[in-house]
Amino acid sequence: MPMNRAHRRICSSDSWARKTRDRLLPWALEDVDLGDDVLEIGPGYGANLRVLVEEVPRLTAVEIDADTVGLLRRTWGERARVLQGDGGDLPLPDAGFDSVVCFTMLHHVPAAEHQDRIFAEAFRVLRPGGTFAGSDSLPGLRFRVIHIGDTMNPLDPAGLPARLERAGFADVSVDVHPEGGSVRFRGRRP
Image 1 (cartoon, rainbow, N blue to C red):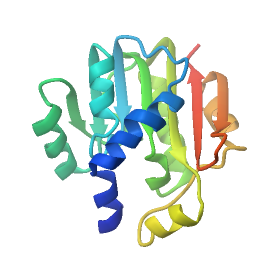
Image 2 (cartoon, one colour):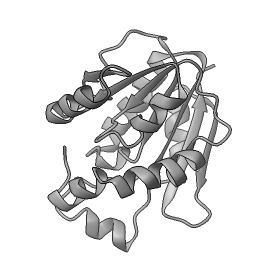
Image 3 (cartoon, helix red, strand yellow):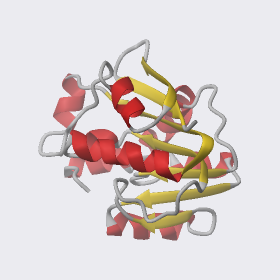
């Protein structure tokens, strides 16, 4: 995982899990119908996964880091299918999910081209009419300090709609949180 020790401590903390449950996910998924079969790309330590597993009938998570996959399987393996893989090359069949989500992970993807492959893969594994939704952090002083020594490639909200449309998504929307600090996005597979 491309994160420094302090960042890993924050992302695996109970306070981050509470913030995710109470603030991040409600805003990121406002008015989004996830359906029955949901894929989360890049669950990290599982703060989002622990909320999603209570909300949807079937949850699959794909995480790139082998040690984190082990942790997620030990904690959530009876309630979610956890696979090791790269979000830019998902080990999943076409059109298998009602929705695909990712939260606060795209800025850890080192290149925009790799982020674009994640968008294309999200499109590929969605069923027609399915939704790709998520959120990510925007740079600020605290964000930059937490990411010292990390991979840090934040999304540009102004350019994100065109990138999602190039991946094939329709009805794309991108919003910056009213208090700043994060961006949410949605797109639908026609």
